Amino acid sequence: MTVDGARTTRAERQAQTRQSLIEVAREMFLADGYAATSLDKVAVQAGFSKGAVYSNFSGKEELCMAVLDSIHEEQLAGVVEAFSRDTDLDGRIEAFAAWAREGLGQPRWTALEVEFGASARQSPYVATELVKRHREIRGAIAQLVRQVTTEAGLGDVVDADQAATTLLSLGIGLGTLRSLDHTIDVRVFADTMRALLRSSQT
Image (tube, rainbow, N blue to C red):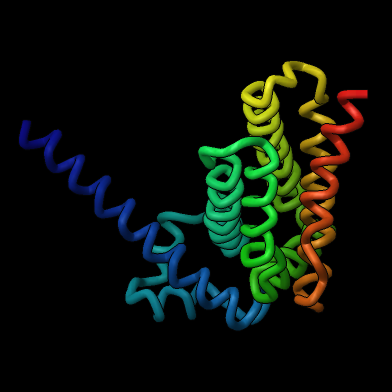
């Protein structure tokens, strides 16, 4: 019992250390960029040894991937919350558009995404992990589309996988544009969603 308790405590401490490193690295990556942020700097800022960093992450690529995962989780949670509102489909689309105005195209994390994504040309690990994550995100969006259209009484008339690919591609492109020019209107998202649904009903 004591041994199990000790193991749990060690596991909890390691999880806390990992989370602290992700939070500190996130601020540093967003503030200074991927290339300018070293593991040494992250360790010092977080109050840990470099060994503590390597006991949780194989290197800077894996740490940055964890940071991007945390950003993606927040973004996806915002989308899910918008489409889970207690209203009709049009109201949910409007809630999504409202979220997009604030949550889409934040300059610092968009710049980090672009900078880190460029490293995929030299790193098979980064390329593989980004592909895996984009597929997971598309899958989550497709599941959300299925849920929303089913609740709206549209059944299987919408190709959820195709809609997810369209919306993710639009989101990436629009987010990049808005990171440079925040005046760009995000209502194109709402209009695209409505167009997808209208085409399915014809």
